[in-house]
Length: 120
Length: 120
DNA sequence: ATAACATATGAGCAATTGTTCATGTATCAC
DNA sequence: GTGATACATGAACAATTGCTCATATGTTAT
Image 1 (cartoon, rainbow over the protein chains, first blue to last red):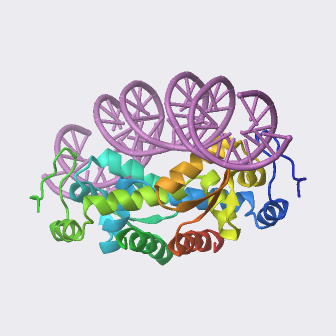
Image 2: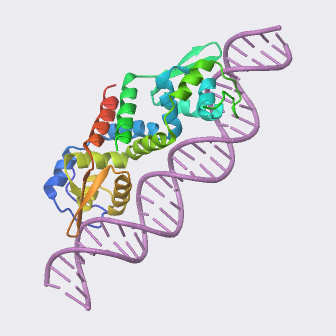
Image 3: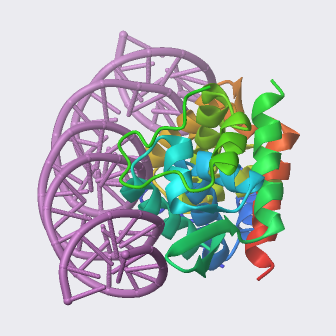
């Protein structure tokens, strides 16, 4: 635990106990990074549409591009990103690649966010 | 509802019924934008730390900067962003500004994400 | 009034991001 | 084999982002 210094900030600590309390409750660096990365992955309109689409049905890249009226390349780039984040998974079948949500948790997170947005 | 054209994509529609089904289930543009914006607001390590801190206690900018070991200016900029998104709210008191989470929903969303990240 | 402090904010800049374009790989039909 | 199709991917480029720096605003103390 670091001493309560101001470091390079311009102002001083006002409530020393609060600062200490918050520092003790701090998440570890890995959790912060991972959590931010998951939210960031969901934080783009195109990827929101993709996840929404895949929540309806498993889909191939081709159909996704058509449904979202986007380039196959653009969709493919985003699919790779979502797959790297383990948000979606791929099933190969012949020359087609079928994508689907990797986990039910993702849908829960997605719908929690949607609920927040639509209720107000 | 648009006809099932390929638009500027390179490939054709494979499963016409699936594409139609996905298009019918599509979110309206505003919901897509709002949802992406909320997730994007949570999708940054600094803002994750800020929200975590404010989940412990209401805090002034000064203490937040000290707790996160960041510049007052950097924190202030992010606070403005979060406030514009209605994720946090401000309570003025003298020359101090106390920030806190705007809504319990935010904490639910935050913890749902955290749960997803820590369980695997 | 003057100084000190808490905070906000605009400009600027490096880093990241989302798309397009061109091209590569893999599978199928012939 | 050749061509067509489904998809992946690197490069490039414009747009966005998160910070720093300087400065402005507003409150308190003297």
